[in-house]
Image (cartoon, rainbow, N blue to C red):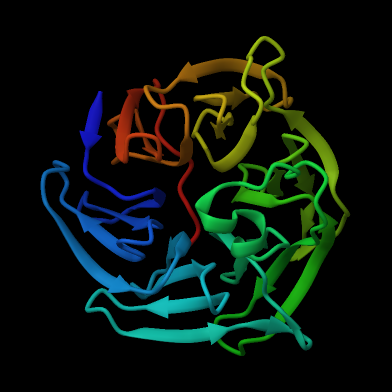
Length: 291
């Protein structure tokens, strides 16, 4: 079922407390954060930032935006459209491709940086032909929203993207080009391990060349719902990291997902090929997000 149409390269869906949604529109004609009514019929632009990618909303109502455009940055945006450049670097190392966001149990902002400038990875808006082997230095950062301190958790990855905390409070990050989901152990308020293999979302029976894990969210059932760009599905990984199900999307370019209001058992998926949000009955609510 199609929930919303007419979006320009949508990503980063977030459910608000009143049942409405936020998304980003990454297309060069929009480059904005957009507010969508609970029925999907009305849209309004909150702020134009350039090329916004990931979104997260905290308990104060601030919208955190992973901005991957000409000035790669973490932005803090208000619902009335005020934009603040919050962070652009870590210890003198500039951000390259801020991609996705999650708020942790500690209230800090966790951000993937895919490790290559957008203009270098997709010149002219098309992914370069040597995407599998071109140089990149993907990173994961933790940003303190009070002190603005930025800490690098990991680096040397091939296009890290989706990021989420699981029911075990561990951090789960996918690495797009090998299609792997990694786990980082969390204990006593800290990440205490390097990356550990959790699962792989590539479908060996799919003829797609690109099988890119993009955004992902946990269900209350403990499963991880991973949008797979190019493969055209949401691959569901069980608590053991094994594939439980593949939910086919109408378009081949799903980018991210969010669960609907409690009790709805619906998953809302942003999709780039047709510029839509698709919605699926999945039999579970989402794992509550940290704010």
